[in-house]
Structures are given as C-alpha cells and as structure tokens.
Image 1 (cartoon, helix red, strand yellow):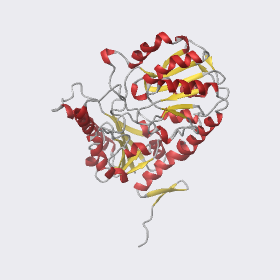
Image 2 (tube, rainbow, N blue to C red):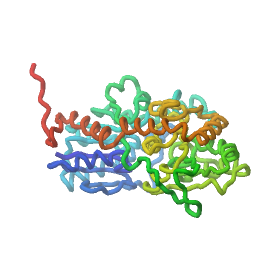
Image 3 (cartoon, one colour):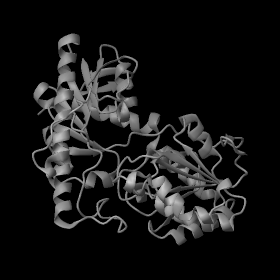
Length: 423
C-alpha cells in the first residue's frame, strides 16, 4: 500500500505519523513538499521549487489564492513525478491545506482517501483578525481579504474525506456545515523528553549558567512578533525586573515574522519593542537567545521558574504544551485556545492579554510563591501527559483515525480489515 503526505515544510506535523506507517510491512511512504521540505528515513520525497517571477494576481483580493494555486500546481507536478518515477499510487493522501499544495490532489488521485490537516480557518470577527487594537483592520476591504484568504483551504477540505484539527477551538473556526467532517487530534509532544529534571542546567551564551534553584523567566516565540504577545511581554518586563532583582529572562525567537504583518520601515518587531523599554531594563539580565536547538530548549524549560505564554486567538503553540510537560509554572493570556489546556489556578495562571501591569504582577507573585504554587506545576504536567503525550495518546489516535478511513485496524501489531456489520 502507498501513502502520500503533502506538506509545504515536510515533514512538519506529519513527522511521527509518517514514520509510524513507514514501519509497517508492505507500506511505501511518499511525500510532496516545497523548497524547505526535508528528506526523512523510509520516505520518497519530491520537492518543488518556486518560480523566480511568479504570475501576478488579476485582482488584489486574489493574491493569496493565486499564490495557493501556484503552489498547488507545482505540488501536483511533484506528485506526478512520484507517479511516473516511483509508481506512487496512494490509497491514502494526507496533506496540510494551509499553503495550497493539496488543491489538486483529489484530481490526481481520485480513488484515494483524502485527509487535510485543517489547522486554522480565518474569520473576520472572533479570532486573530482585528483582535489587537494596536493593529486595527480597515473595514470591509479587510473582511473581504480574510474571506478570500480561506479559498484554497476550503477547496481542499470540501474535496477531502476527513479533516484534522489540533484543538477544539481551531476546529470551530471552520464553517458549521463542515464541522462534522473534522476530527480533533493534536500532533502530541514528547512528554518523556520534556520532563522535569532537578539537576538541569542551562548555559546562557556569554552569560551565567542557570539551574532550577535560580529565578528564571522564560518566553518563547517562533518569531518575536505581536501575534504571540511579544509587545505585551516587553512592556511588562521593566516592573518585573525592578521588583525581582535576581531574576534572569530567557527569550527564544527569531527576528522575522511568521504570522502577522511586517514591522514598519525595515525594522524588526524585536527591536521596536526592545527600544520602547530598554532604558528601563537591566539588559545584563535579559538574554535574547534567537532560535535554539531542541535539547537546549528543553534544558531551558527545565530551569524555568515562570514560563510566560501569550497569543492572539490563533493556533496553539507546541511550546506551551512542552512547557507544561516540563512542569513549568505557566503564566498565560486567557485567550482561546489557551483555555483548552490552562485552567486558571489549576494548570497555570491566566491574565488578560492586553494588561501588561497585570502580567507584571502575576509573574512577580509567581516568582515569590514558587514553592507554594508547586501543585500547579505538577497538575500542568499531568494534564499534558494524560491528554497530549505523543507516544501513548496522540499518535495512536492519529493512526487509528487513518486506519479507520482505510477500512482497517491494527490488532496485536497486525493490520486487519474492518468487517462490515451484518445486516
């Protein structure tokens, strides 16, 4: 049996599930992806390259859909290459619909079962767009842009047999008529690797070596940008450091943009909000680490005294679940889908996203009461292990859903056909 995975940045969210099927006897795994796709063991990959001069959209509102179509056509070419050169004939196609690569998969493989990873559906009201008054959206024109932004994802989901979303809130952002098609299953986190370690150490480059007994505030973004609350965090820092003179702050994240708009005048959001508060900061205790290797990231979480997580109503970050798994004390914005995993006072502590003084107060109080609040740490890890453990919860559920779609199931390590019920 052949299975095809489609992801712009393969393997992305499919890193574990693709390998789970690759370990099965008689299964061949193929993948189609973009320029950043990576070769994985036991996977035959075809990656496309973007044209230097892509076609221009005929209308400004069609810009996103035009880009999706370009990627979809290029991905279709990569899939045809897999057909032609490797005989790829998938019974199952699993793809991420966010960049357009899945647009034409159903046309190429009409007899296959199709699954799309429906990570996020954009809405004009009630989620990320227009959430932050510091970055207002401009009326009807912006609403129309949001609607057309979903065109590629909608096309793929309508053609698919099944959609997968990582959280209930992310699922509910989709149109109601499509909700019965979408199942909720998270990608999962390695709760063994991300576990507490009493003798952990983290060496700050050019700075101190930190241990769990030290006062360490951690903050993580893929990119340091407003979508993940970097501006609010930086505005809270001066008061936190003034009142906690021994605290060190570890900030992980790049200088670019992953989700929101670009910073003005060729600057970075990182520098803009650092410049806003740096005259009130002891910069010897604020450490910008950039993007760090995963083992270092885990070590950093293991020495954290207080992990701060903020986000617009948007995609839930893996890093929050990993911090919970590492038994960090979490201070987080009370935005969806954070509330699916953080219950205030039980698995973490919540505050209003925009209230920087409240964030300062909550972090200061958390640092002062670390021992008293230890039950929250333990509850956070227990919640992560029970609901989001990769090996025991999420991956088995992913595999079971795909097996069910294929009309089969795993019994004692052997794949069996699911017998139809007798009438």
